[in-house]
Length: 295
Image 1 (tube, helix red, strand yellow):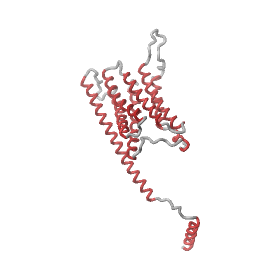
Image 2: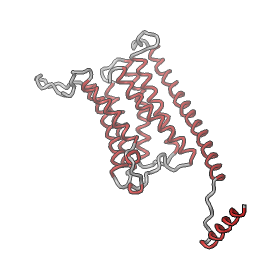
Image 3: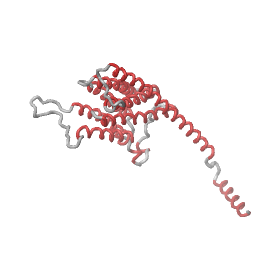
Image 4: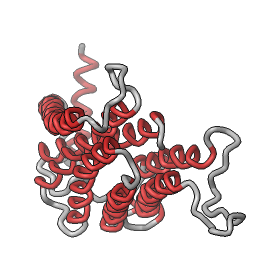
């Protein structure tokens, strides 16, 4: 993950899920739902198609994390970083510290995806609390490893990663609270907002560290460059709020349009009344046949 591609993958992963949760949050607020994601019906009452049995969210977590784990060990081709300790050295030093940190982060998000799949597909009833706990654990591990990830790094890398830790910690805190208190819209909004901030900042991190627009690398020893990092992070707070407001606005337009269309459909198409007895229906049918014959 210590490359441009290695940071882009988790950045896009977090951004896609943040956008997804923002849409869920907006629709839940517009519909007045008690929970962000209503629990699934019991397994025997669901359909038998594969997309009704396999949770898309959990499957995406598994697929994306596996895509991230495999290159950490085997990219470029011919490299093998599975070895954790150099047993040939008498000092027995640990090897590939950064790669094992990245893989550990991915593992816990992989675990969250597996828990989602088991809870929603394999159990008779969905275990929502277990799913929330697994997701909260993944973000807590991410915060913990990020705090140690900045050791022996340059001042620039330390600053950008500390700014990344702030929204990540808030997301992990909200997820932990939601294990016991899931029906608080304020927490939904904060989680979606901080999710957008941390994902956008991860993409900004790629720009700062690997492809600066000026063509000149950022100077860690320059206080002005470090000050602008904090300025840019504050801009990302505003950007995340603007994105959340835009998503809510689009969902609001869709919701009101769909509601009006549904009401008009119900008004135009009414079910045939079934209060008549069988004798009355036969008389009506006989009358209709006589009228048809007389035309």
